[in-house]
Length: 114
Length: 115
Image (cartoon, rainbow over all chains, first blue to last red; front, side, top):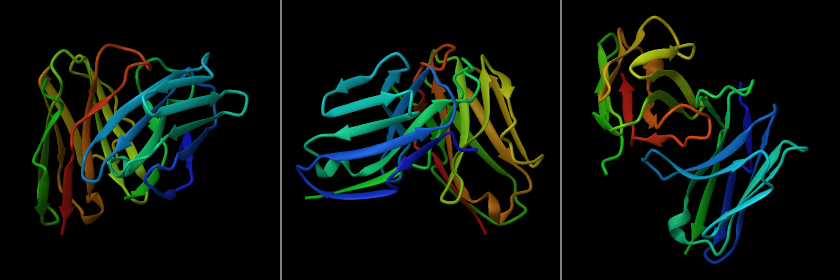
């Protein structure tokens, strides 16, 4: 069963605009991770936020986590055409296992038009 | 550093044939994961290994699928006999040491088409 669900399924914006993607999950977690997948390539880890963190930044990425609402958001500021990709949230398997087993959401397809 | 290396990148074969997918994880990584990605089901974990030992194979769809890791630098995923519904992109990923805080590093996948 899906643990993380992304919203929206697809997002189309112009270069320079900000892109916001949301992820909701069902059970308690100790961290949440975001990955990017370019067309025809594997997933690339972007950022990890721990359950005791509310917000985290990495370059043009800003991630928030609201454990009370079981939701996270990924904001990409000043988007570029190269940001065009699918974005996935991933959470440890329900039950808080520490074995590195992640469940991925269905992803948000981001298209940035030059 | 070399990333996770998968081969072949593309495989087209006829139903009933045996298919073998290969993966070389990042050196020093203790965990290796096999995933399958389809439009309908998204990214599914099939099986993962710790120090070459299979830990959880609950995602393997049926007995036609098998995976091995004979040493720390090589793993295979085999499908025999293959069926059209096995068509998907298969990813291998590896991570360093135990823990859900460790990011996973993915290969570029094998796009498998069963005719």
